[in-house]
Length: 377
Image (cartoon, rainbow, N blue to C red):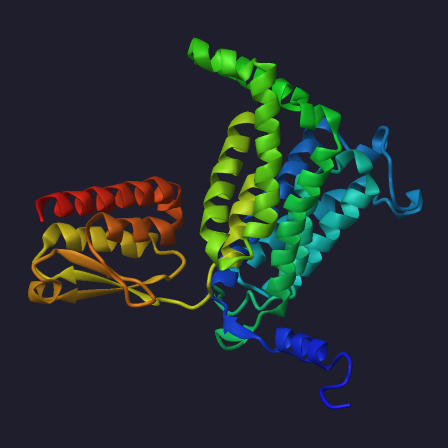
């Protein structure tokens, strides 16, 4: 019988997964974000300790044997350690070891008291734990531990966990009658209206009516579940990834406006960087050397280009056919006008929420110009 032995293709795929090497610039950005969030998580727990006292002095539900629960003094010391480790992660001082220690301590403390468990806290700590196995200390560190290109198999596990967060959330809501029917949305909408009223902000009557409509809230609940399912899958496919990222950004923005989920939205926004193509500066932004306004805009782009997507070049205006600027995509496609700015929005985190409206406007303008040209031809 000819052909490879059973399991050979799977073995090659597995070895290929562990052998894959890519740029680690983006992993460094993710590390900084998670270091800051771990520090804030430790600070939040320290604030709760100061305000409410040690959790072990009142009713609590440990998952570990009670003898394993730290004393008040040890608990306070662990919170200090988590904050110190968070700072070390941000600055890149033994960052992977610090990620492993801080996330492990956080997960252990969740096991010491089920009442302190929240899905958002678990997501932060578990993703930080997985990040510790990725080469996230090769960039943005006081001392690099190796070359900027390294194996990223752990990044794939990190991405998989992000998808599992959305998939598990959506599936649990499908089987939760209160979520699927819209009752949870009703409670959150009522709280949002109440909080806005306390701040002196009055919503229009139509908005209050919409946020109080059982039919509308039931529809919103199902849309939220469908969106989470789409995010779980769409982040993996190149054709749907940008749309999934855009929908995810707005999804978590709406969550921030209507619910208290601690750092969860920031965890997911930071995690989205793991799905960005890691190769750097594959696009070019050409600016006419005599166009002062375009040069200032290029300076702003340089400041906002956190993902290192762009190479900015000053060129003679003749090279641009008289235009002040042009964008060249990674496939060589040249864009000017609104199309160029749409590409900027797509690749710049601070401008990313504007991407889809800008793309729709650019497409509409293109179709209008095409029809106008046909009429006049």
